[in-house]
Amino acid sequence: MKVFSLIEKALLYAACLCCVLMAGALFVGAAARSFSIPVFFIEDFSTFLMSTCVFFGLAAVTGARGHISAEFFTDLMSPGVKRARQVLEDAIFVVYAGALGAQVIGLAKSSYESGTQSMGMVPVSLAIPQTIMAIGVLALVARTIANLMMSIRDLARPNAQNSGGQPT
Image (cartoon, rainbow, N blue to C red; front, side):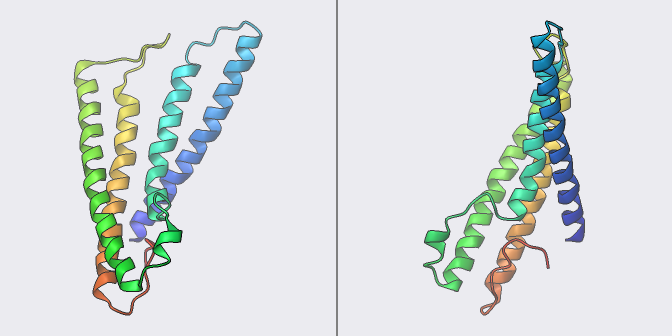
């Protein structure tokens, strides 16, 4: 579990760096346009950075179980029902994340094989950002599987508190 934690932390730091770079790129692009300086790559670059930020942050958000929160409802449940609900929730999310992963990997592979490029002023192979998306989704799939295993473990222990997705 420590390896997952390190990978998630590295992806989260990369996502934060992408946010900072994106803000800088958008600022430079806006400043350049205000002085009538053509900068052709900023739109594609900032879009790629935004998708990297989102997809690299997925695993960390999922690990903290920040993707689903209905505490007003779950606080009314008994601990056993909470644990059973968590297993069901995690099992559904594993299926969803796996399907998303298959789609993103297929998209990246198709773009690579066909040589699809962006429509911006500077054509960039779309396989590059799609591969970055695939890396983020694969980390998400790994995290959802780890969450499911922890939920099943918690369900098997009748007096256990929910681990909340945090590795032990």
